[in-house]
Image (cartoon, rainbow, N blue to C red):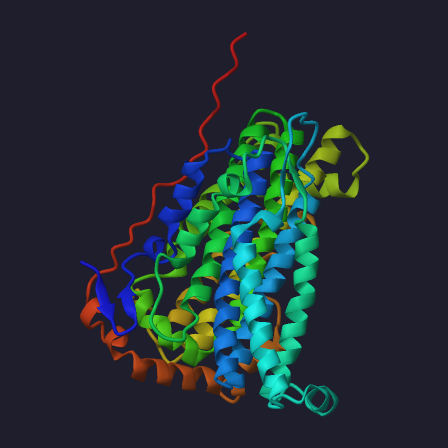
Length: 489
């Protein structure tokens, strides 16, 4: 039986919180070949739908704030909207970077103008403009004076400034997504993208009150959509490497790396806009969940497929010779290939795939670094417990990040490219050392945040009520890339 508080339902699982089953239903409703050009482009447009629906929500609520002459809350929502527009610009560039149409003779077209979410976003934009126009006509917003004299410390000017940034960003992503060719027949935008189910994913769970719960979910749902496609691409890359098909492996790995930009872009709006008090408004409703419960990201991508990708690469480079206990030999081979790139076809391919592996490694490192902002800024220090019961949330997340770097299977590749070997301890970081010291303001802020969080959420800190129960999440089975059956002769 689901638990509730005054705002609504309290989540029991990460998958339930982020509507993972709904996102899976969208793929099942209109199935496409895994790791295909059409599935990759469809994933991009599904992520676009999620972003557009969040913008509809933000602009509609901002319009209501303006009608009530609450310019501060309206400017906060427009700051969030700026973040979603930047995500959309990143998403809109992905089809142009991927270039997936290839030599297919049968093609269809996806255009964002056919998106149901675009239509409701346009209605919300008109509503926002009408609300602003009402203030202008009643002289409650002196636009020329605001533009000429005020800065971002003024809510009214922030509101107008963010609105015009959002409007320009709209013209960028709308143009980029106006006409994208797909190497398969497209019955309609709604059918192909399964847009109605994307709306279900956004609105299947809402909270009472003026919160950013929907946006918190949206910025998790977009990475989940993209990561499913990335994982399928990585699996096919592993299969291709094992089959001695480096070109196919490269194409899949390159596509995965291009898509990763959409995941990183989705972190920034949260770190920039989700302040402690706003997060605390929704924290209890997140229930016994954690970002580390993402099967797609935390388990399949960061662990299972990443490990198997490198093992397959190492086997191929060493031509089947043992390398697990002879990392130095593998590193030397990689270093020689990077220093003598024109020595032969295999050397060129080693470097090409190696560079893509480094790109994947850098993405995962960047994600872990940026994701640490969330517990830092919204939970704080002083042994503040996580929702799932970790004794110190910040230390737990930082510990996972540090352990992953020390155990990184791709370290031989990094060393071959003269990148730091983090297994031997870190280099000096005097600014970081200062920031982690008791005298820095950053440490004081962390302590203050932790004190507030512990006082507000004693049920979490003392494991009472819903949080007295054991977290029901269980790690999934390892995703093992199976050998492909041999083609009949």
